[in-house]
Image 1 (tube, rainbow, N blue to C red):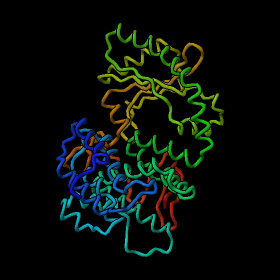
Image 2 (image 1 turned 45 degrees about the vertical axis):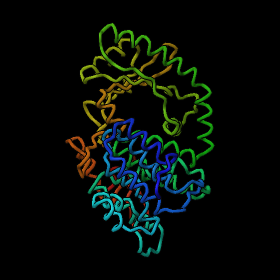
Image 3 (image 1 turned 30 degrees about the horizontal axis):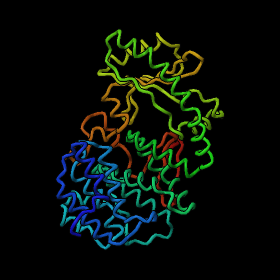
Length: 395
C-alpha cells in the first residue's frame, strides 16, 4: 500500500498534532500500512474496512492519554489484532517494530492453537493471560479497554444474542476494571452502552425523560452556580465551576437500589468545582455550606481518605431554593485529572509500568485471576466467572 488514506488515518493524525503527542508520523504510517496489508480485504460487520477499528482504538488512546501517549502504545493499538485475526505472527511484528510493541500486541491477543472443551474455560484463560500481561505492562489493559470501548460503540451491527453476551461480559469484567483503575471516562461510557443493550427499554425511557427535562434542570443548576461564582470572586478564590450531568446507568442503578421512580430522583445534575490547591477545596466547601443547606449524611471526604483507585474529591449534597438536592464535587485540577483518567493520568512514557508514585501501588495488587467490582471478587475459574461476595472466604 503506497499511500495512507487520509479519510481513515486523518483523524488520528489530527489529534496527534492537536494534542502535541510526540510520535513520529513515519513510524505510525508504517504501522498503519502493516495493519492495512495484514487485514487486507477484511470488513467489520458495519461494512467498513477492518483497519478502521485499529485506527479508532489508537484514536481513543490518543484522546485519553493526550501528551502522555507514546509511540509504542499507539503503534501497538494499530497492530493489536494482526496476530489474532490475520496470517501475521508475533515474529513479524517484533522484526518490524521491536520487542516492546510485540509484548503489548501479544498481551491483548487471545490464546490460539489450544483446544478447550468449553468456551467458558477458554474465556477464563484469555482473561488470565490478559491480567498476567497487564502486570508486566499496564499499557496492555489500556489498549484492551480502548478496544472494548470501540467494539461497544459499534455493537449495533451484531445480532441481539451476540450483542447481549458482549455487553454482559463488558459489564462484568471491563467496566469494573476501568473503575478499579480509576478511568472514569471509559467506565461511564461502557456502563451506559451496556445498559443500552442489556435493558434497551429502560435505557430509551431514561434517555427520553432526561432529555425532556434537561433545559429545566440546566436552568436550575445555573441559578445555583451564579451566587457561588460571585462569592468565589468576592473572596478571590480561583476556581472553575461547571455543571455535570448524571450518566444514565448511574440513574438506573440509583432507581433500582432505592426502588424509586425517575421523578423521585432529585440529584440528576451536579456541580463540580475545580481549585488550584487542596486548601481551597475546604474553603469552597465552607462557602457552599454557607450558601446552601447541607445534607449531613451525604458528605464524603475522599481527599483525606482516597478511594483504592486513587480517586480524591470532596462530595457534599445541598438543598437549594425550591427544595431540590444538588451534589457538589470539589477537587484540585490534579485530582480531577486522576478522577477522569485514573492510572492513565500518571502514565509515563518510556516506562514499562505506567505508574510513578505510591498512590498507585494498589493497582499492582490485583491478583492474576481476579477482577474487582464493588460487590466483591469475580474469579475466573474453569467453570467460568464466579462471584465471591464481600466478606466471604475466597478459599
